[in-house]
Image 1 (cartoon, helix red, strand yellow):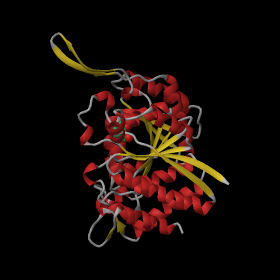
Image 2 (cartoon, helix red, strand yellow):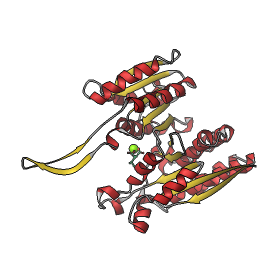
Image 3 (tube, helix red, strand yellow):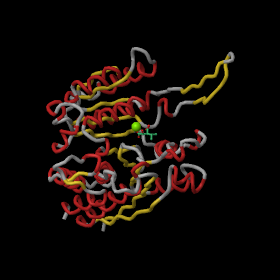
Image 4 (tube, protein in one colour):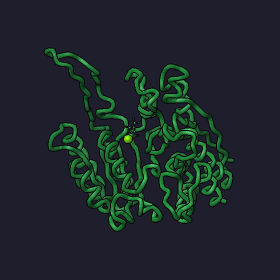
Length: 357
Ligand code: IPM
Ligand code: MG
């Protein structure tokens, strides 16, 4: 009997609804394939601030380290916007990424044929988009030394430091090149090498790593140009690899090309336990109303099966089930248009589950 243990961290806002939906789907796939999944639920983010006074406790970190995978909903909300910066809800995610050594964030951006009309771009520009955004996740300006406030010459200032080391760029480049091997073998490395020293080190290192992959075509693009090309020619991209901050920004931009940010999954990988979460936030304004789209989290569960449990067939079944339900016209509130059938978060999970029978 194959057994795997998953830590589930619903977080805040819609986190509870979307992770329950994904667990339901995981259970169904596991059941069908003779896999036993056990779960352990933990608090993080605002929910943990309320309970323990901090967004992430050591016991959650330890549980995550012991697990085979972590499934996370989303954290944060206006209720915790005014807590001191060192205990902000977002620190839960940043802390987990650091503690678990999750240096690579994979954000696949595909447009479901049924949703092409929801893209802000013309249908012909988006149908067929298939991008893998690889974001460096555990270094850069997110983790450099910060100064919230200091007064120099009577003027208040703040600072964030960006540092990248060669080994950090090496490992993310190797991962991007290996991922590209399973796809169209085109890697675009995104930086701001015309201005930033960290970007120049990034670019030199990228070239060195790519020289070990004769089958991979590496090109470089400045981040401002990449932001523009994503709108002008999104289909021209295969793998994009970039640093933590640029990856954060470009992935939201790329996500919205596909119609709804509610659809997109992510996998955060390192040398230990992987963490899986949708790329959207906790949407506190719609929490508990059945309006949330669970598909981003359900597709994250599919990535969990693929990358952490080695269950590729189960992952593919989930992805196909999602496409079928969308093709049949079922939509959560974020994607509803007259002529389609509006369903709640739970109903959407039920429909996807039914496809897995
Ligand atoms: C993301 C999010 C996080 C980030 C926030 C919640 C800290 O925007 O995963 O893209 O900036 O990395
Ligand atoms: Mg983001």
